[in-house]
Image (cartoon, rainbow, N blue to C red; front, top):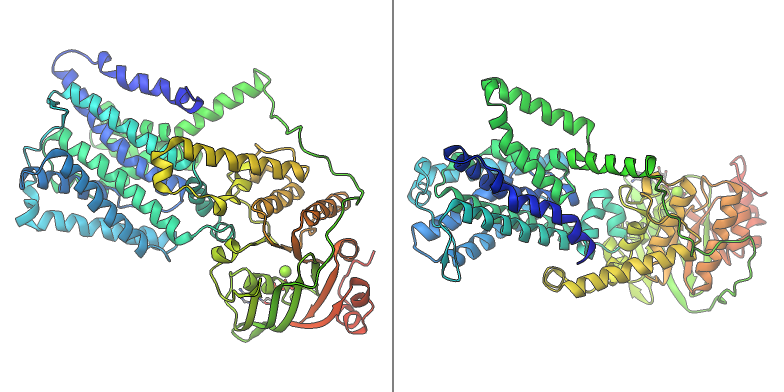
Length: 599
Ligand code: ADP
Ligand code: MG
């Protein structure tokens, strides 16, 4: 049995054995009903684990999808007398379709507007369910909803249906788990953590957002069917805005990024009203207060809090320590690696490139060529347009005019993720890591574009998906080792600045790019770190990676660069070898008064 399965085993046992603890008689059957209810909520809330927890997109429409699933299934079976499973299929397909639609609409919306749009969708769905009486039955709802029949075995009893619900939850949890541990899972997290960095690593924001919404709607429909078949009767008021807020609370309270946490949250919020019944109308205030407290003080939810406690216990009481990667190759201050000789084959050709921001001519007609094997450096005073060149080059900004060719192919104004896929990787002047992911996961995201296993492969073929994830992790680990990095399991946000740089560079080179763009890699580093960095660049160069880097530190530039271009006020003022440009009078004039490190 694999480790993750062992992790889930205790929870599975609790779920399966829970009915044995029920009080006998009517009270017992009442609680069983509540347990069935909470299981159907869990499945739908898992949709929010994907959408909110993984991809960071806000939705207050989960109850609408839950309702569309429940209604489609119920109307097909009750009004049209369709079979149970074909109706389930139809409910899943139709609801996922609506998810795709909402995903597409929300593509260009930031969180606040996105929240508003989803609320709008929720309200419209409620109105349709209430007022399209001819089809939905309006406020009367739909009754006599069937229970499933499995291989001729009719599940009519509540206890039987409870176990059927547990099985459905396990299936949903499995799907979410597989999705999370695949390249699509990394893409979802990367999207949440930093959209620009995600796109710069070959991830399509479009398809990843669509995937998140579709997966979320699919799980909502699964939960909706379970709810309808469990309750035997549905009416529109179950699927209102309040229920959407409840789903949101379940995911947040339990732990938005955790499958077990979300299940726990669903259970808690279903049973809480029963436990707090003695408070009468004050219940809602207590409930609200609890949610606020959890959201404010426990960003990882109750389950996250629990795990944190276990971790603290292991470290403080059991003396468990973070393991360092001992296979990392230490970097010494010598430059003995054989470096490739620069060729005359142009890899990158920039012609008359301009980028204007309104009246500001940040870049105004730059031409430069980077040959295969070069370490070209772009120098210039602050604000001279260097970063802007890199941003246009990597598709973050579109060019005002001019052309960029890479390997002889026109790439001007292609999307960021497409440029990356052609073999151009980059780092950012202000480091853009995925802060909540470990160093290793950060680098593994760099492998996203070289992966081949799609959604079907991920969910249906376990070995294929596992193999790909393992291979990416292995490659990421090897790349970090190559750069002498020893803390693969530390969260990126907890790493010191210089180490964050190294991780960002590892992420950029893990996919073997043809061209690496580095924006001020030595900025903010001390002397020792800068020494290590030049060793890193030597190593990368000796692997055959061509580089274009922006740098301020002249001693650093002189030690690594084979070719230099100098910019001032958006124009190129000099080019040649490093020593040539540094003695160029035009360059000296441009730098006059500007602090430049000639040391
Ligand atoms: P460098 O990297 O050489 O320090 P930049 O390329 O960052 O310079 O900036 C060049 C000029 O373009 C600066 O005057 C800067 O204010 C301006 N600029 C850069 N990005 C933007 C933007 N998104 N909107 C408006 N102005 C910008
Ligand atoms: Mg800059």
